[in-house]
Length: 238
Image (tube, rainbow, N blue to C red; front, side, top):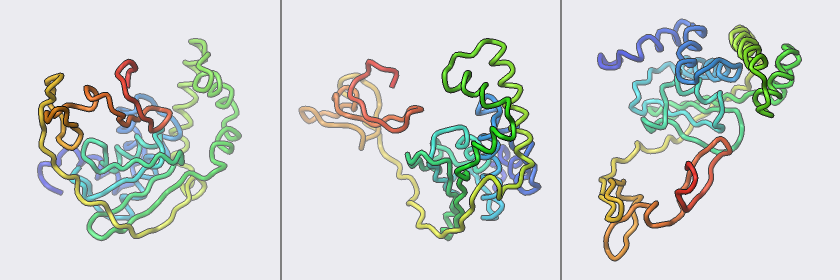
């Protein structure tokens, strides 16, 4: 690995040694808390990187294609080093807790998907978790005591699930993919309405002058916890 990629050295060492607890601690820093699906993302990412036998420096050597925007994805980003910011993360809005990690050099890839009965078996294994999950996450009606207990239970589950057999949690399929081209570099132009810089392909022309999508009042894509959507105005947070 290049000498400048110092920040990845610790993670790469954990991947090679199978230090899932260490990787989970790294994922907690970005996710904000521990949960079983962050653990699954960590395990899936570690398996994929070991399988591909490659390192990630954030230069698109490895590409991760996630099919969900949930806790699982944060574990994937931390371990694989594939993020939206370095253009190595691709999002398919399929609503499946799954990822495909591919090596750019030859297209060698592996897809890992959470088994369909995993959540059901998880709550059977940890019976205290189900009712708390319903109150805290689903209904958002938790008391302070509920929240405190849930965080304690959820964290314990996350750590214990690291030790569970991977094949009981995830289905694994080896693949060969055609990896997308490297991300292009676009010039910026200045919106003649708001004065802000915008990537040239995202600008529109009005009376021969470039304007941004917001000022143009045209549809633009956005991603929230509900998935991909389209909007035209700025009256909402997105």
